[in-house]
Length: 135
Image (cartoon, rainbow, N blue to C red; front, top):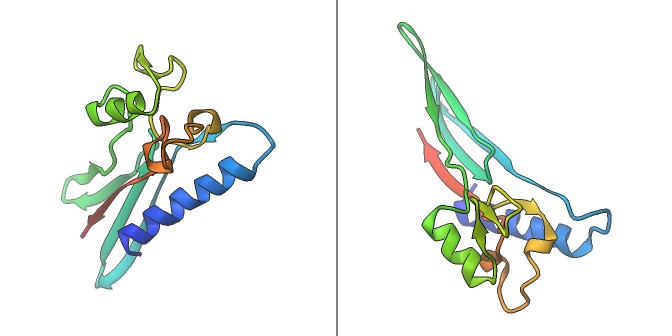
């Protein structure tokens, strides 16, 4: 799946939920991967996450398994995240967006996405995933 298409699909999905769902204002983080075979026991892996959900990949070794952490938590204290949050009219207090949320990216949480002057990718809370490819 092309990274840009996957990112756009997730942002659109979030926008649809935020603008049409009337059953509450909850939210969720997410992590996922797509593994495409490319040969004998070899795969191209695409990994994505939003928030603090994680993807770990285990690779067998002679002595057991090596575990690779493939995702990075999206925290309000990260400089890029903090700058975006403040630019959208939010505050980071105690490592939380507006003193409430311990993650800076999530699906839903529509109350954090109400700045009409900002597009979806520039709100206090965004649903833009980090994407990685591994072989």
